[in-house]
Image (tube, rainbow, N blue to C red):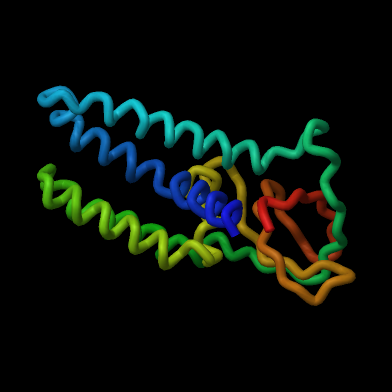
Length: 171
């Protein structure tokens, strides 16, 4: 359970990287006006590590062993179905931030915690705008030998009958 929560948090943080960068720009005046610059450094480190960790989870190379190969029975591209949801979340998170005050930051933190609690067990965590811009798509697939449906982040287009090599992002 602990590792699953950690991975959900990592996916969540990397999903909202752009929001965090905007937040850092809006509140940068406070980092340099008051002696709060020390809060900026851990935040940047957290974002870098979170996004590197997500990238590392997506890579399949010899160090991590060979990926499992599956024969795709049924496939559905669900990337675009999450676009409106993500855009709404960005707008919701950024509205209180533009005031640049303490109350806006507290409202941002409350909304951030609420969204994480709401989405931590959801498929929405797998949609990352940066990955979408890099050509990754989220597919819901059913593979031969299993009746379960899996979500797959994949760079190439997947069609029924394809053989795909994937590694588990997390259980």
